[in-house]
Image (tube, rainbow, N blue to C red; front, side, top):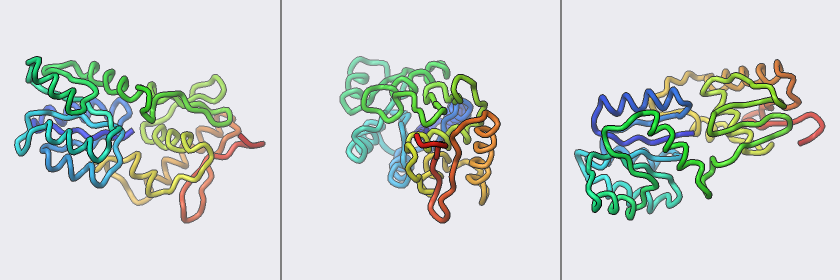
Length: 226
């Protein structure tokens, strides 16, 4: 899952980004409203975490602009503004949740997963293909009942492929979904993640394999059909 983080305080931005990366998210952290809107214009996001007190524009204006472009994009507001009118204004502008500073990072993590599980969101159920299941909430995979230990990137690759249900996922789109702007990505990073995922599924004796479609992308295939 790829998340846009708009927070002008550098120390807080880096702390939040590091924590959420550790929880399995791909994070694009930016420090201004303009940078946030530019990022949202070129990358697909599953959610946005937005500070209201930005240096260049009001966070609510950023939220309204994001909502016009992506009406279903889940949004969590971070702010020190604790007045009822402020909270009502944020929710009316399209926020799904509202967190007052200071806050606990584990609470932010839990609230982010909660908005992503809401009806209509794209990450609200456990996905299955063949004998493999993937739970987006816990970022965990199993083959039948046995857990398969995956890195963050391997889990993200599996999530996108399993959601496609055997259809081809174009390589460029797959890279957009699993890597943030700040991720260090080598020329063969995706291929390496796919290769490790293949080996782990094979080691778990899954009937599912990852097939490369030359020049296009990847898809899952199960022996004997889905």
